Amino acid sequence: MAASRNRGCVAAGHPITAEAGAGILRAGGNAVDAAVAAACMSFLAEPVLTGAGGGGFMLLCRPDGASLLLDGFARMPAGLGESTPPEDFKAIPVDFGDTVQTFHIGRGSVATPGLMSMLFSAQQRYGRIPMREVLAPAMHAARHGVTLNALQASFIHLLDPILSSTGPCKAMHSSKDGLLKAGESFSNPDLANLLELLCMEGVDEMYLGDVARSIVSACQPGGLLGMGDLAACRVIERRPLNIKALNGVLLSNPPPSSGGPLIGFSLLLLEEMRRQGHGMDASLLTECLRESSLARNADFDAMVHRHGFADDFLHKDRIDRHAVGLAERISRGGARSSKESANRHGSTTHISVLDKDGMAVSMTTSNGEGSGIMVPGTGIHLNNMLGEEDINPLGFHQLKAGETLSSMMAPSILLRDGRPALILGSGGSNRLRGAILQVLLRHAERSEPIEKAVHAPRLHPEGYLLDAEPGALNAAGYNALRQLGWKIRQWSDTSVYFGGVHAISMSQHGIVEAAGDPRRGGAVAWA
Image 1 (cartoon, rainbow, N blue to C red):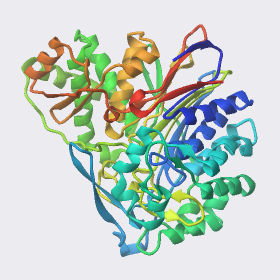
Image 2: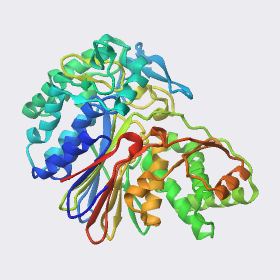
Image 3: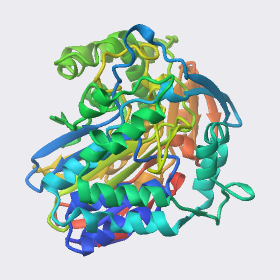
Image 4: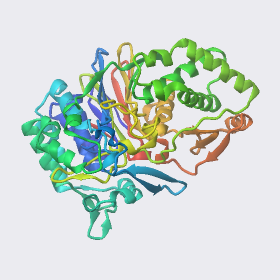
């Protein structure tokens, strides 16, 4: 971390990703230009976490606090009439060491990919420099390669059953000696050619033209994606979730995504419990995170696509009811049951950007684990969003055509005095909301420097099992939680499991600080 006054900055999941964005800031681009450059570079530097065949969300905020959420996440394709479920939809077990989790891949796992539509639309509307200049670093890296670090190589080997499921996908992630290893180069010349084509022809080529036809062809037979799905896949503009808390306003991802509302619920519940006289400690934080899981398991997943859901879910009456129940539980003990999908990996990455003018961008993207389906001649590895249980809580292939899947992604920005004061987000599936909340509390409430807040040990509850990084619990917190019925699993080291928060803060005096999360290879680059 470094501190500076009125300088642009990028925090991301890889040094090369961050530097690609910072280089565009130095070349005269703004925060949107830098975010797009960093995102496309992440396709090379973080190749199994994100990609051109995936989806994501971009939260933009101008220096005056005016904000907009761009939804470019994966959507439900129309399918083949009554022929669903799709034929090519197969379960693949992945061994995470302490558990085996099943994902579904194949042509029937591919959702409509909205990421490139979002990136091009954002840059065209809000960027400052030509798109060809913005994408030049990624195109160069795609042709000449990026040396894999140990973390990214470990992800490739972890997902071997998926990446090796088809010949073209295996070839993309292999050298002559097998799957790529740390120190070897990952390149994707076809992706470089695709990016160059889109710079010349526009992103419609990917959604209406020959590239679109190639994508649809790659999903047949046995898939659901059609030309009509791609033609209808335009970025959706949403009003960010707006939560008054932490002596400011937290902007985050609104419904139909679930991460923002659940962070807001936990935060508002914490503040209500503190107003009632409960001290802020690890046991209260754990119980509030647990309570948000219980709230999700009521009517949340069935109603999250409904207009006005966020206002109802975060209404003071609901928060007060949960506060009463939580206070009773803390005083009397007793367990309640809830279940969350245990996605151990969370194939997601985040980018935070602040430019010298004070424009902020918080963007989270993902390719799922990948479907194993490559689009010939494009370098695109298509997503498997329809095959991830945790973002299909109502069951596979149950959404209406065109609906955005309910992601846990929560790109967020905290406003103080009407301007961006903290830009952050995380990868990590259902752990990311807890990771974001813990960094928010440490920095915005306890006034810890952003690097200390990001690096600090974290907690994550699932069921009544609490995972704790070293130092996350003192003796008093440990004993309090055990008395409340918690089983505690103490980790021997920090882990990628606990998310990857990449964050930038700006003080009221204009001092900028930033931190990349070492759990997920985070890095910071300055303009």
